Length: 120
Length: 279
Image (cartoon, rainbow over all chains, first blue to last red; front, side, top):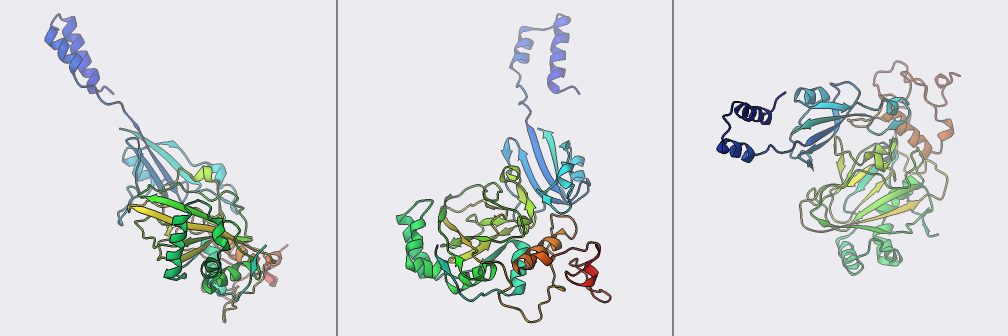
């Protein structure tokens, strides 16, 4: 997918090839604001099972380089399950570690953890 | 070793609730005058280990061994339990973000209860002043502190917000953290252990009508274990406390102690009964 930066660069190159690139045009191209570097947002969701529609037991959100504070005041958590987060543009980058779920009598951690990312 | 004995103050249901949740709050059991004296003491001794306070009679009588506290400890640890021999003070300048989830180093995950980790709040702790947040039932969930440090907001947690003079008893391995605070000022939280010196036995207050076969071993939701595992875990710990761990047995299937209310001829599989013998 082309970004705005790519299109602007192509326009400038086209003007150059056609001999239409002026000093003012070159200066404008050089001075244009650069887009901010993208940052990885992370969403840890601990679910009741490996199902994508299992209810969420725990959540940690890392957004814009900060660990987000808790949802307070009776507000709803942003997603009821992993599928809702996917529909909102989050990409799963780690599925639950199934080895943690193999022994019924011994519960190990909050075993069904999905880790998702977004770039912003 | 300094030991203590007194009458137990918890009954069967309260002991079982402790097994399920892994903690018990005793709200406002220390008098205000003692709380104020305690705050004066820790202002004069602002160390993270004010262990010498355990040599002060007024402190031992009013915080370590008052009937409400010592009676609960006696119920859970049996007679002649050993008194704390180390005192920690979690002294926090508020406001602070939430601490990482953890269980303290030295945790052993099993149905055994050979010591209690106890916290004393000498000052009121509101939701805004960062009370300890506990995850009920987590003493049955094995994890290392290193593996739970990334956990954030969890459903079903309990905030130990309480009035001044409150004491709460915990299973050592229960997951906990200091929650976020928005107030200003110092928050003090004293922490210490009591120790079992005798074999476990059902020598707390026997509750008329309590029936271990029909008791409700379920956790309140959310339960973060396999279906019925909360019942199995709580029942096993209760049996251990009763000194009956050798007879503890799970039949599986629809057998005891899974929850239901309409058994025909009663639940099968209770330890010691013929239906539990399948091998």
